[in-house]
Image 1 (spheres, helix red, strand yellow):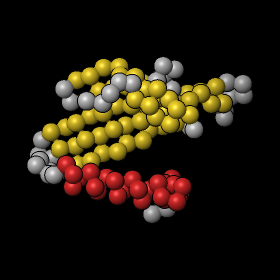
Image 2 (cartoon, rainbow, N blue to C red):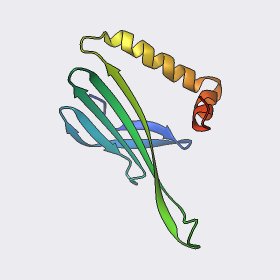
Image 3 (tube, one colour):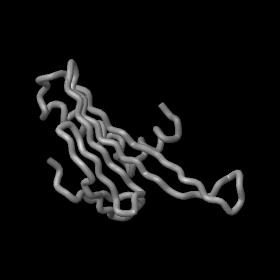
Length: 118
């Protein structure tokens, strides 16, 4: 079980993310200002899926109505899909490799991904 609270650096600032609820197959977390939500989910069947999702909400200027703000939301997901019995250490090494590639050189590959490159 993840310790409560969790700390994440988001938008350049350390954010405290508190556990909101738990089930046998997941949990939901959130920041006190509700700007950030994190969820963990585990699905067990023919394949085992482990997913973490970060949702970030922000208030921005409405491009259509001057002087009015609207809520925008974005999400980031990481899903690991493995067959039952797959070695955790081996799966972790694949996740570590993917994350290292994306974050190397100050996140150049994440920038390329978000820019639509493939």
